Image 1 (tube, rainbow, N blue to C red):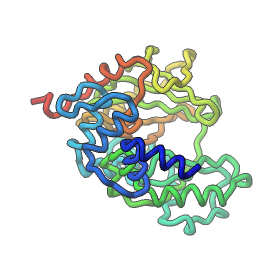
Image 2 (cartoon, rainbow, N blue to C red; image 1 turned 180 degrees about the vertical axis):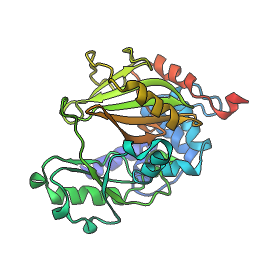
Image 3 (tube, helix red, strand yellow; image 1 turned 60 degrees about the vertical axis):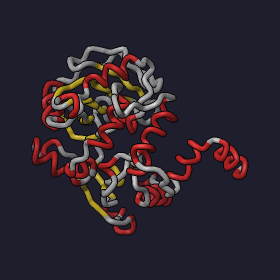
Image 4 (tube, helix red, strand yellow; image 1 turned 90 degrees about the vertical axis):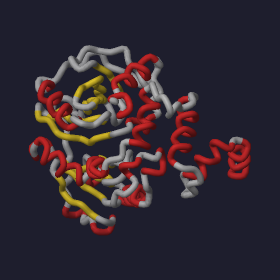
Length: 301
């Protein structure tokens, strides 16, 4: 089976480059790699000379919009101080502990419920609702695997390149009415809100529902996920918008993630390249429409 897979990769040199890249052999530079991934992920060539679509412009930003502060903003621990300075610590999820290695964590001292993840990574979050049922060996393997990973190399997202790998344990949060955390993702463009993605039912069957800034339902669909038409605008939605606008001011594009927990707003994270800049829109019209919202430096001149 393994030899068969290798044979197939040899016959497909583009896939082989990605395969080798994910195993530490970085054979091509950032520009060539993002073009390659764009082709493989979206089935379209990436025009970096005259980018028009949302995905193309995100690749352009990866290469040309590199500010040191972005590294702080994507670090899941350092971002908390950044947000505290910008809008106040009342929006920051309490940190239980920050660790350089898994062995430093004293699980006996942790509360029955908590969230554990790496500060430099994406997608490795572990939610513990009952510590007595936690498979510690499984958690150890997952976290140690994440600690070894440099997320930058996956899609060449520059802000992650020089992050220090650490582990963070946070307070577990859950809305008492909904029994979940509803994630409000504000797609912002230099302090302006373009669209809002609301994620629900994340633990079983993810639902993604898109709205405009005024919380009107949009026909935007991505990745074929289910959506919900019964979602009601949160009472504190105006405040959430104000926070998103403030945190995104001066940045060509950043997604500001906020949670609404029993009427209280919490900061989630800042994401510069949603889906790595390879969103697969059900209607390509949205790829172009969102692309028009990103104003590159050259378009300001």
